[in-house]
Length: 395
Image (cartoon, rainbow, N blue to C red; front, side, top):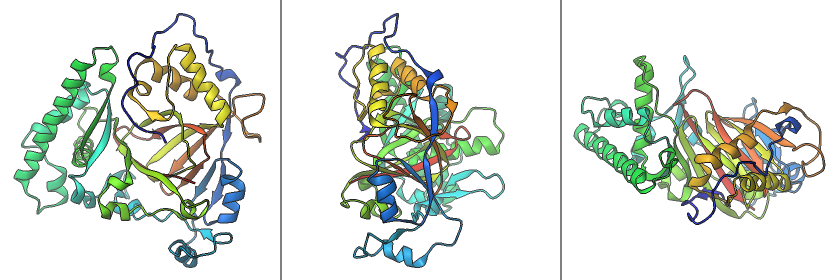
């Protein structure tokens, strides 16, 4: 499983060489389109075309009203799985956590989430020493600043909320100072991992909204990402908002290895990696673009980049070394460098071009990624906007 983790031991070599051993070949790249289906999709078809075939599949919601009988099947563990169908993605979080402005089209977090503000979650923050981060901390420290809580919940205790904001400001400054002094390398200021309450994201989102509404020229806070937070660590009501999809519980043995939420301020980024289990990735809010590659070729790309950097890497761990410095820049360039559009058949394991797939997922979409397929994920949209996803690793 690709998960948040600590940096690899510093004894591993990271020295650059003047002539890379790995030459990027964007000119030979063909971007393929992931096969699509429209929900509801039968379990039999999903198994044949995706799960057993080991091929990615994008499942988009139907524009037709949901089939009530199919929805009932989803909640019936005794339903015959060989002929049953999976309804359009039915996750209460789609509407309970997020709302979209009918005029601007911008997505926002709902006041409902404020009930769970104290929940501790794993965050990632890029460029922690940047001006937007400093401006946000100053905003938290200002007793006159409006807060996400007071605006969304008039009955909240303003004194308590003010203390919470001051505490978060202090914790952020402490994290940043400690990380900068304990990591003297030039890339130390690029990326920070921290554990803080959900309230941090709620306030950061409100801060960005206030900048936008006041036409403030300050840039919004970005790259604040709740990355791979286990669903099991969420309060029970939030877990209930993300019930296990029908495909996950019925396509295979019904074993769930793990599940996570991904929620943050755009742009967000997940580096090139592979999962040791099949993955159903569901977009909750905003848009993300993924690039994928079949196991052998994805492995070759990763190992080639590592060889060019004379570095070792663990593609199953979300370590700091993958999110900053030369490793991020070279690997991101190898995956996301320009390529020609194209189509064609094949699983990408044969001779010829790199067979890199690209797919865009929007709210309500489900993307199945087979066992061992390599992928990288980027958000698409306005800087500072909300983007949310959830996924299940299963067999």
